[in-house]
Amino acid sequence: MSKTAEAFAPAKVNLTLHVTGQRADGYHLLESLVVFAGVGDRLRGQLAPETRLTVTGPRAAGVPTGDSNLVLKAARLFRPEVPVALTLEKHLPAAAGIGGGSSDAAACLRLLAQLGGRALPPQAALLTLGADVPVCLAGDPLRMAGIGEDLSPVPELPPLWLVLVNPGVDVPTPAVFRALTNKTNPPMPDVPAFADAGAALAWLAVQRNDLEAPARAQAPVIDTVLAALAVQPGCGLARMSGSGATCFGLFAEAAAAAAAAGALARAQPGWWVTAAPVLGRAPDQLIRATT
Ligand SMILES: C[C@@](CO)(OP(=O)(O)O)[C@H](O)COP(=O)(O)OP(=O)(O)OC[C@H]1O[C@@H](n2ccc(N)nc2=O)[C@H](O)[C@@H]1O
Ligand SMILES: Nc1ncnc2c1ncn2[C@@H]1O[C@H](COP(=O)(O)OP(=O)(O)O)[C@@H](O)[C@H]1O
Image (cartoon, rainbow, N blue to C red; front, top):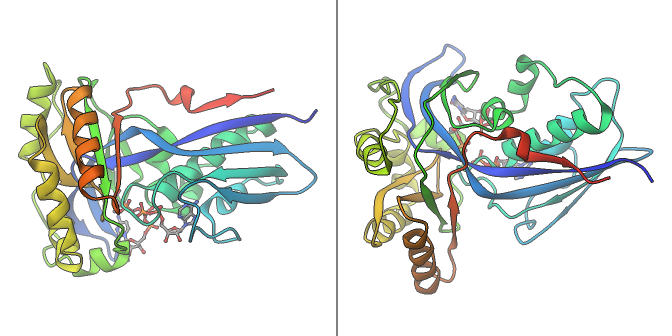
């Protein structure tokens, strides 16, 4: 039987996202505290005569299955090729500010490195897939700067839980960056070591997501989502992730997060709502050989 492996592609969440400048090529300079959630897509692979991709799962609709899928773009970075039959099980909404495609690409790189016994491609190659791919490949809570290539460690975070909410509107990333009027906003201070979840929430509350205002202007339902999250018992912070439209509530208690997710799902059956822990440092848990 040929070798198989499975990789988890967790949702990426920008707990903060400060836009501090713009490069000559138009890309924006960011400073972001990035974490990963215990909810995500799954990618399974088996060595095969040639590379092919099947997309399944509850959020498969609308995800490209051909060459524009970031999984196939990632697979193509291996030269010579590692031919593999891939099944991507989509659980995350696409184009939603939680890096679904970037995290899938990172999962594919881990999977092919494992199955083919190869080294991971260099960082310059990763950036050709997307600015979020290096942080997704690292898979750790990190401070992200530059356009996404400059990653540095942060002190271990206290246990925290997320409620992720996507109202089902599309806000394309380039359009949100284009609509941002002030490109030079104050930087994000160094992330301190937090004594507990309360200290982390207090620090995060005075940081920002600079893309929230332009995204809200394009999709006013984001205001409704943020307001609905903020009033949930135990919600310490409600903010948008990335370029939206997914927003998160941050909680110190798992039970409060689960209760909030239940209440929001009942009140808004058309929204994608899920509760999940913030993952700690354990990128090796993101891949496992299945034979
Ligand atoms: C905004 C962020 C924050 O983590 O997240 P998402 O909203 O995508 O999840 C990312 O920087 C997005 O990363 P990613 O989605 O990989 O972006 P890319 O495909 O490289 O770029 C899409 C487009 O966004 C704009 N872009 C992206 C990154 C950046 N630092 N500056 C930009 O101006 C550019 O217009 C680019 O053409
Ligand atoms: N595996 C994939 N999953 C989701 N979207 C993908 C994938 N491959 C390519 N795409 C395309 O990438 C775009 C960005 O998707 P995604 O990474 O989920 O969003 P975001 O950058 O907002 O976090 C989508 O418009 C989608 O068409």
